[in-house]
Length: 232
Image 1: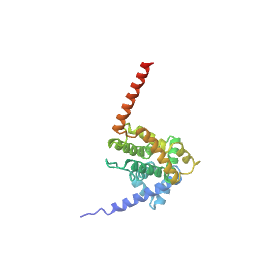
Image 2: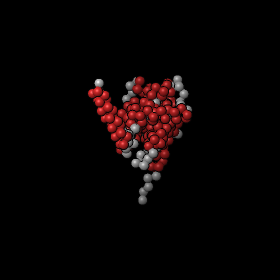
Image 3: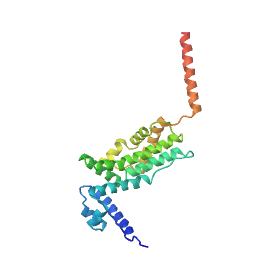
Image 4: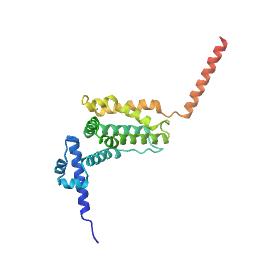
């Protein structure tokens, strides 16, 4: 029986190349990193790099997609009917802030802005692998929350836009510009509680009994006002 002995070694080398590419792209940017430098960093020949990746653009796209997927997919939360929604909501907000405030994530943001500023076509797949991927995770979370009756029904994308604005907003732009420090653990806790409180003011599920009481109160108030008007 013939064995493919070379395959495991190829996978190891591919992993070495990807890890080296991630380090260099984050440290030196896309234009500042050459295939020669990546090969040297990975401890392989330049030919080996090209055997695995057609060009620097392909390597960049693959490396960035893998980096983002590792950060985002490992932190997904599945809701169930018996879930403590507010605890899970807090946890997913906390994990989101941890992701976006990682030094690597901030470097990725700078790299994306650099590519976007020069209208580099790599900006779009980069955006899809990072921002859009995280956005999809959030819309999935809110879709689950609606399905299990934890929040009021609405467009999950609309809910995601609101929540991310509350969590990040102008504050995170200042962090990216370097004019504000990454929020501390205590500051993150306050940010999350405020974001959830404001979000739930709009989307908290109202119990049917409370809703009926409010409708009854409104009808009674209108009848009372009508009677007063008749006596005047």
